[in-house]
Length: 329
Image (tube, rainbow, N blue to C red):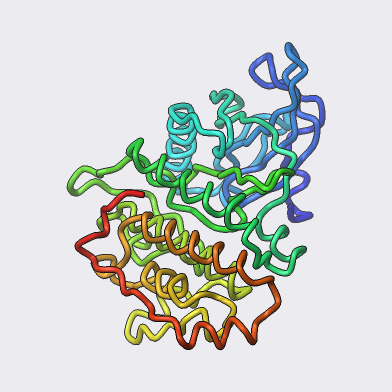
């Protein structure tokens, strides 16, 4: 949390909704402050997310109530608050072991709050940096494949996450993932002509996320997931989609990391196509390519890059056909 925002946070031991006691600030984003809290009645540790758009919001002199401090932005403040409260509604409809567990959401202090379970894990970004990007079969089977299954579950519930990226995935002590932050999530299929709030993350958002009316669907989350896999294999996200509008020449991940199997590299590249109609639209192919990569790495110990390079040069890469995209595993 930026130092100039510390004074904007709720003070320690403030009680919310007569139930949740604020203990300390956990983190902050452009639109919210997240606290570690405690349920006064059960003693359970929780995470409390408070709607607080830093650029336009301020705290009243009572150090609790929030108001729009920027003249002319009152409409935007309430529009964003409505989107924030929608996160609680969507999250309350989901029940999956790899999704952050919903506890409560409510309005108070002229703003909104979302209460979830407190997860004592490590953000995927830090996890990968600490483990030299975990190019191991166990990371695929314990973390990535469950993450793919989680996205598949969300899509079958008629929801798009729209913000899949390493900082929104937490890795628990047993290696399993928890998908966080449904602040950009929406229901789909979307009504014709309906506008969607624009939320983007550089390197991880497909082109359609930069438009209020563009068609969005599972292929949109697949783009973000493919960008996450690019970060995992290459150590950096792909070039932002806006920089590839006129010349889409994204290098294969094998240019950065020859240890990656050609088939997985092909699927990642397919998932990162700028034009959504050319992009992979089924998680089936992502799941299968990851399973193949895990199998290859189990056969040969990590670190044998020279052997992998020689083996891959003689591997026939199967190009998935679009007509089979909706096949299920």
